[in-house]
Length: 334
Image (cartoon, rainbow, N blue to C red; front, side, top):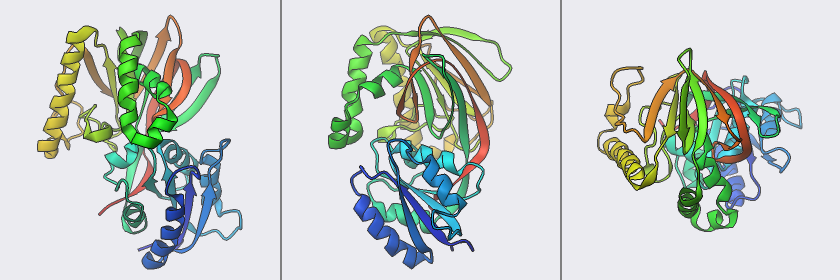
């Protein structure tokens, strides 16, 4: 049932396919589930959803107030921005995935490619507290930035791949557009020299294709990249991909297949969130897995490409990331 504040706000990316259906079905679903007066906010190039979500949480432009739910409709960038605007409000966020990756939705089993089912989960599902990743980074120009992430951030090859993926191709073939970009990046990519540490641990010095910091571990097509990542365990999962040459990539690929296959056959094996026991990850030298509550990293030699939740963020020279334990409430299926 809706809370006493039963008004629903929808923040949507107007360039995404399906927004007309979102508006129509939101009104229908709101009436069906007891929500009143849906109000809609469009994202803009200057504000991808942070300000709109904050305005909705504060009572809306019309001053009517009473917002009990804010639904983010769009890709991972829109979802992340809406989440950022809701930090500290206590208002739950619903998700209607309309993007290419839709990684948060995948990790929370929110329906994909079905606007009506996703709206039903948002308006009649249960509220679940999830961890919110916080990051402070310095870009290649020396400017400092503060941001949030829901899924993962990365420096190196993964960010290069995202930057080289054509938006038009993503619109036509979805996440498969990343396959060609990955192959191209694999052929021409280089390893970055990085030093990083977790919590109060020692510094790790390495050369890696990419350094990933994750809040959850599932990618497109159900691939499990970080099998120990649990979205509400208060921990970050860190992966340095150090593969080099055909043999290194073959070993890395075999590990990822192993993780994915095991997850699909026996998901109960990955429920644990303790630091030391119940881990299912299979490691090899090209892949280095670690966990901690916070991580700091410094890119040596030259700035590396950087991405947050699949969004290109230029280059980075250093960053620190940590978890705000269950800092966001999201509507999920019962």
